[in-house]
Each structure stands twice: as C-alpha cells, then as structure tokens.
Image (cartoon, rainbow over all chains, first blue to last red; front, side, top):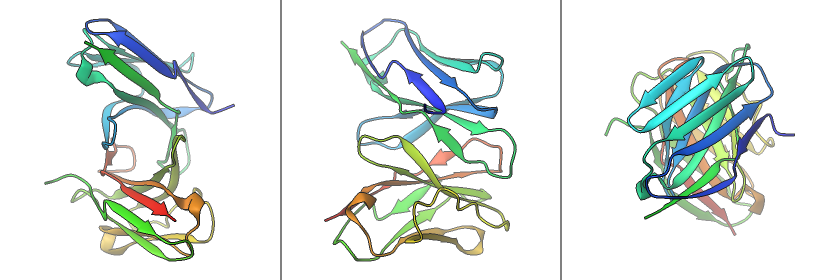
Length: 111
Length: 113
C-alpha cells in the first residue's frame, strides 16, 4: 500500500463543474503539497499546507490532520485546468525535507 | 528568469555511457532536491542537499547514481554506466529553507537506448 493515495486516478469533467480530488496518507506529516503538472510541462506548486484551508483563485485546498486526508477543489472548472494533480507529503521528523508523492490524478475538463 | 533551470532539457545516450545532468537553483535557496519521474510511474525522491549539511542520499537507486552541489548553488546529478531503466524525467527543485515551498525546474528527459 502506498503511503500517499489519491482518488480518483482519472477524472473527466465538463467546463464549469466543481471538481474534488482527494488525498489520503498513512504517515505523520509536517506539511502537504498540491502540485500541478501540465502535459509535457513542468511542475508547479499550488499549495503547501499543514492545517485548515487555503484558497487561491478558483482553487481551494483543505487538510484534516486527524483523519490524514486532504482535498483539492476547483470551482468553475475550465479546459485550461486539464493537468495531472499530484499530492505530496513531507514526513514528520528527521532532517530530510523529502516529499513522498501520490501517483497523481489526471484531470480532463471538456468545453 | 529567476526560476530553477535544468540542462540539458533532453538527453539521449547509449546504454553503458555516463551522463551528467545540471541544476541551477533559485538564487538564495539553501535546499536542493533531485527527483525522478519514470514513464507511467509517480515521482520519487533521489537526493537532498541542505546548506553545508551532509546530503540525504537515501533515495538513490544504486551506486551508479551520485550528485554534487558545488558552492551551495549548482548541482550535478551523475549516472554512470546508464541502463535502459534509467530512462526518465529527472527533476530538480529548490526551496528557501528546509521547510519552505519547493520550486521545480522543467526537468531533463533522459532516454537510454
């Protein structure tokens, strides 16, 4: 079992729909990251959070430390949101700041 | 620009050859990471540098892999005697400090024939 699990693996939505991508993890963490990777493109960090909720434009990320779960929401989705969304956690303790990655969610938003 | 840069963007090599991949982190970032993304696989951690501390090499898959960070800035990832399973996108990231947001470079796509 992976330490970081994402669901769904693939998601197709119509433009304008509200989208939720989920991430569950099994290790103690100090922070959780949501990353975006466009086809053939680089990786962009969307959020880094350790508690509560963060909002940036149409994107909202929440985390529940007790339940070891995070969600990424996209409101009023647009075709340009089509990308792979990756959840990654920084495990708690130790001197290393390495990230443990989920396998990603491939999102396709159709016009 | 002020982002993380990597070179080359693409590298095709023959099995058994050595390759060097370069990463220029954002100026002033003390932490630098190398990750690998294989086709159909998720991202995996390779190595981490933080300031003058000894690097965390726990993610390197074999002793054919090594990395250096000179002067606390530029880093080079070296793969000796490349194998076909080394084919992947190698990503570099840097952060201001140990617990800050990581900024990723565009990656180097390595193809071993």
